[in-house]
Image (cartoon, rainbow, N blue to C red):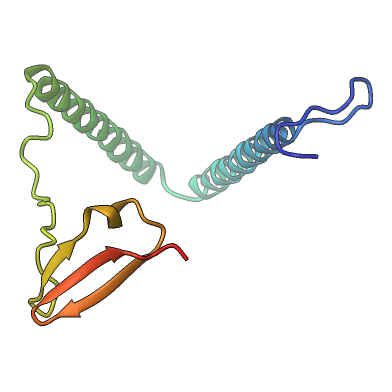
Amino acid sequence: MTQGEVCAPGDGSLTRPAVEASKAGLYSFLRRLTAGIGWLLFGYEWVHVSAQTPGKEQIVFVIILVTSLLLIHVGIHSWIAHNNRLAAKGRRGLATRYTSPVFSQDHLGRQLLLDASSLLSREIVVSINGDCKVYAAALEG
């Protein structure tokens, strides 16, 4: 059976894309189930440990945790608002440090010459003529 081919109706088999989708759904479910069990264990251990600590330390922990969560959310929303303002002004992505490489010479300083036919060719012959490196399409043979 080739990819995307549908089996005869009523034989109970699935097409490959349908099988891949069901595998992805199962993987997603198992991943979420595992994460949920992990969070339950984490919560259980915190309850177990917090029962053994004095009340003052629990209050300090809750204050620090809530303050951290608020600062994280304020920072995230501020950053998103900043990016939205840049996008609204049309100035997004204008200040980039990436520069496109220039392929006029190789690392040994030889000038690179590209034949126009070599751009679409399946095979390329590279030859060196003095201080020039020439890329040409190979002869079909």
